[in-house]
Image (tube, rainbow over all chains, first blue to last red; front, top):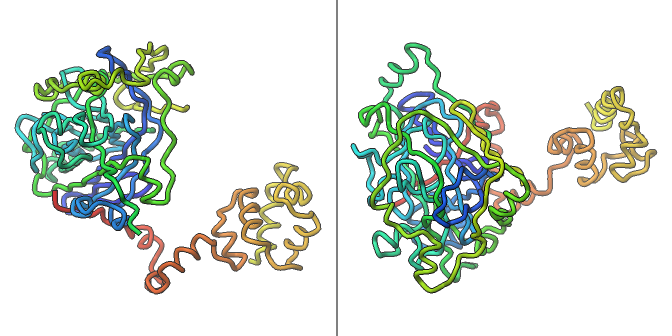
Length: 327
Length: 116
């Protein structure tokens, strides 16, 4: 089952192992400049609020009720990263945006691919964007559907899904026992870490600025994952402007710009881990970033997109992964 | 233990470490007369309003729901929740009245997966 508590999704697989639990939350962050320069990791500015679709079904589009799942509010051009905190039991997590796999760039399918279209938790502490090269991702940036920015629209030419899709597969029971329980090896790190609906509130994720981040190679191999016991969740993205009308709750304030944050002397982060990284997806590497697309569409320069020079870059390592920004 | 006695005991413990927890100073911070707070502590008058009880809980570092319950009150936001769906929540609370704490804490709601 998947529980929602404190704005965090908890995927539990008691039928596989009592410890088979995977937690996922969505971190607010600043949008890094989309200027083809490479940036370190921006901070986490706290979790996005997460709501059950069923709790506000009367105010949401029919398709959302069909998809089920949850929704989170995002401003246009706001960025997010997906946080995988406190994992003790290895899981394979497949993430898609608009049903485009964020690791491989291929259309959604249940199940895992031999070409590793998933991330392995806890080796992967977070995912900030689309896997465009061995060392880089392009940041997840929320954009309205229908304007051609999202990865889904750029790849399929259609506006069908939006949002984020997640499926989690736990490690097979026997393999977990073999690797972790028999020798008492512990694999854990701690991260801190009346219908009001009038127009479409739907958002999708588009590729933003370039960030140094690797998707780590699966050390266990595809046969380690219990694909008979996956759990899926559709995470809809609602424009923050609609969120108050739909839920009666205020959305979080807009995050600071990268320039404001950096000028305040606050830290950026670099993560070091010597495990092997996956190659980038050729499909995803060919996507146009939001800023490039705006110019292509004749909409001019992207606002708040001046280059910044991160002054303080804190180095974080496996086992001590704190990526917390106070602003 | 009565509401007043509980408040007094807890306040006196804090006062033994920090003089700012005298009747006079606590009363001033929660916006009541010291004489009134003394009467509350002695049980001479009924517990204060929900707002003052919450202020007292904040001041003494106590859980407001627990202090409200000791004052014989139910938080207004909980009342609102029950008033919206009285039959459902009354039934739920009655069903759970004897369940052990851990069972109540483990009541979790599944995130529904749909068709996509």
